[in-house]
Length: 308
Image (cartoon, rainbow, N blue to C red):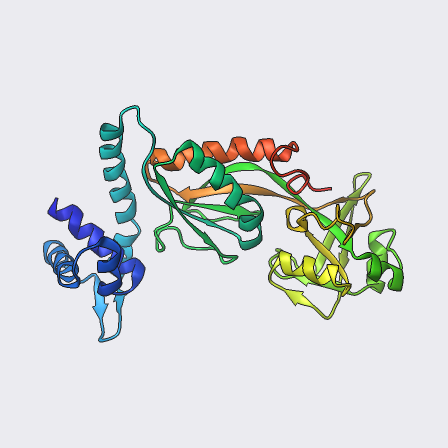
């Protein structure tokens, strides 16, 4: 087991950036953590870390090992778990990432439903609109929105989400209601910089695409913040439908240009290429796919995932 312990100490140190934090994570002493890493470096004949008085940083050899070691440890744990658990439920910890608003609106609830089925599993959910490096941050799975191209990742498509154009009744009373995308040039628009082309809003009707370049005083990196600003009457917002959080039903926002079809994009679960998928990760992906399908048809999270 010494090699496994050495690898665990290395991965924990690389992910936390210090021997002390790694020791706390592993539940062992700082001295033993350092010893395991030093033994691994001796065994491999290379330095894995550049050490300073304040922190440790990875060498090129360390970066290469970090790209492979978590998968090896996962596979090792998976083999032991499969033998030990038999017909029992899954156990251990699942480290999951998701975009902030989508995570709060949908992923949190989905993981809650998943945890009811697998009560022995622990969930570490990290909400962040930044694309997190699964290998470097020790993540098992990430939920991602939109189109992306990253060769090191595999993706399971879960479904689609749509965008909607909205404004508050107060704003529309003061500035008028746009009837077509071309009317947006005369309106204050709230720009969500998380979109691939934040100022280019695309609409379709009768097979024809209309793209409008918008302007406005506010730009934010949060769909939820864009919705809040729209509710406050600051301007029009073009946001993912799941970000509305019931504001349309409550009368705080009005859907606009509804005879046009707005942009849609995929929702996917991504995981590292070239690794055996642990049973717990596979179980979560399968559960998410079915749960998202049910939610998209009005069960669980009505309308918020369906778009206009």
